[in-house]
Image 1: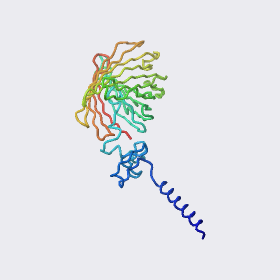
Image 2: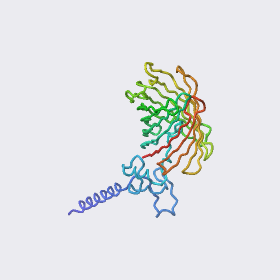
Image 3: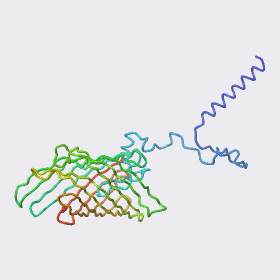
Image 4: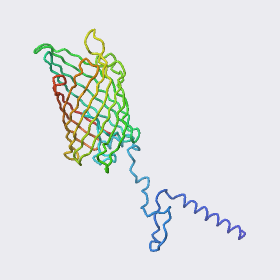
Length: 334
């Protein structure tokens, strides 16, 4: 074989070997060569002193990359979640002022008992399942649905008299929650703010508790972290309402309901949080435009960073609203 041919072949083999070696390198920060540690060399923009990035097998999958089984297991795990502990809209009247993290799915459910005595009758109501589904679509947007569910009522017209049973299915809320302002550690006086824009769709069918029409709902929620343990939040909102259960022969009543709320949360420890809340409903164009005030309080308990139990009880501050109500709930995030 001619010397020139032999040299050419050896040269091509060296070029191919160098190309394979370069292609085998994983992308990421480069590590300085230890053999040149004692020498003083200028650093180029493409070279850094960071540690090499972990291989794909060493990286933990993000919440959005997990399989169904991984998500189920994560909800039961006691390990800290990279998205922080679960934040729920229940059990307070004031929803959370944050959205569900992107790629996460959150379910909230519960049960409420209401007692409404008047001078002429006594009525008790049971609401179940109070089911909410919240899905993080983007970093600042969540898709949310809420369905109060089935309401069972018992009414007694006079003491010792018979009980009349009633109730029905409620309409479903469908909409979005938008994160307008995120927490700012440097400017704590600026409230973390979210906005709910949704409708109540007439899913109650022929139920007397359904509106039989679309009802618009808007709610502005805001809050401040005053200390590591104390948080103050509030909400201001509007709901267009239509009531059909007004008695035989009476037409449906359409009116507007406005609300204002204020709630304080106190973290006893990492798992337990107490809250106390006040809220008011105000009406226009209703048969009775008197405002109704409520107060309630309760406890939130984290079973895991992605699982929560809640308990609440409250009462009305005048003769018109519920005299007493209480309930419990369960929430989980995947």
